[in-house]
Image 1 (cartoon, rainbow, N blue to C red):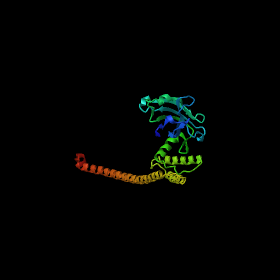
Image 2: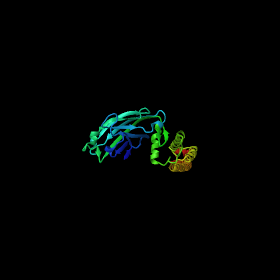
Image 3: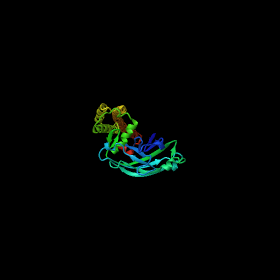
Image 4: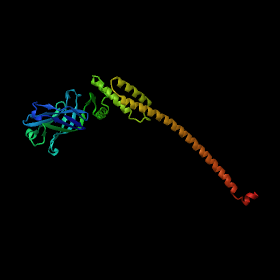
Length: 287
């Protein structure tokens, strides 16, 4: 039984005391776009009577050349009666082709694990947990079969989390072509980051062509097609709104000019009226 939450992963090993295998493995899990798994030696590795635990990179030989991952992680043998009594060890390590596995040969003694009241082994189950902080990634990272730059991992991971069906029908075998299409998809999404008002019509037209190309390649992008339609509609409304704004500004300018002319005429009339109310001077009478 496995459970993953963000950067944490829990692995429940059933019938631990009955295991005969020298080495066992958890399911693969993903943290920050990188695949991992935990390996365990129930009888110990290079040391007897200890549980040995390691964090490993799966399929490391198929990763892009030059890949490296710098991770700080904490392996935990969970005490199921009191978490305060759990055994946990932390380490920081650069994973690469020649060092794709790292951990602890003497994680916890089998004597402590098998202790009747120890709390580690309950109903035959041993619970292993790990917390991983990925500090740095060098080279490309594989996410759902696409080789990505580390800066792209978060965006693509969030996209697949929200729309897991996006690439389910993409059957392109060449990894470079697959990645090229993914870059096209990310570029299309980046185009839509602009405000509808600022988005050039040519860019919007190209977005439709890009969407068609991606769909032909097998991508399921109903959600993106809907968003492009919304942006197109918003842009049309923005265009109509801009025309109406200009019309209103012209009307307002005319009204202001008309108001200014009326105010000037009013001042003239006020001056004339004021002249009739002024007493005529003696000099004006005899001139």
